Image 1 (cartoon, rainbow, N blue to C red):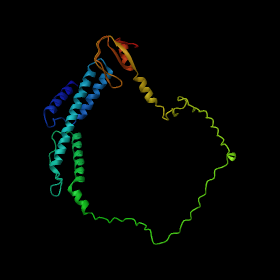
Image 2: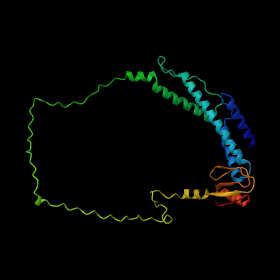
Image 3: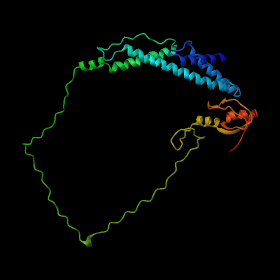
Image 4: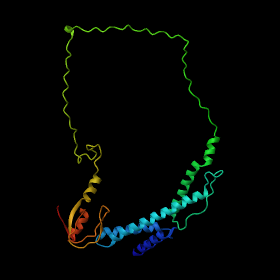
Length: 274
């Protein structure tokens, strides 16, 4: 396990110092995943070992290696397309120059050619060849809808105007007061019947969502408690996959209850209430 960690450090140094890809085994990514899984299992089984600290450093190193290699591969694909596909010089044509980067793993080789295909399709859509094809396509005449013309010479029937009736004001004695309509009484709000979730697991809550028993279980397992640490303890990986520590005597920390119980059992700390 320590040998692979030293290998990661060497690859990290080469990726930083060289513009080309560092040489790795074809099964590099498979070994990397297997190494991370071993560290995680060891950290979960023995949280007081050095595995949690090594896991944290290994994740940082592996992430940097992957990011640097991805950038180098992407840059090589772009440069290769620039050399192979002429956009506006004469009639554009695609003639791929074989400048595939060295030291590619099978996963990286698949990634490289997928970038080449994407860039090739993009340049094909914006090249002169595409524009010339659009120009050669026969243009269809635009048919405008016929507008209905009004014949101004044809006499239209005159519209009979209704006589304007003069409004007569009603006599004061004949004016009847308008009775005000009583406002309807507000209906009492009926609260919806809430079914017991234990009796009916498919019952909906107030937000019309199903009750998530799995989330409730996860929340109970990852419940956070406050603890007073008694001894020096290295960093550990919590059930929520977060790194906690390292710890020193008299430290007051907050962590999941499941991990805190290990401290209580080994008399490395006790729960406190703040």
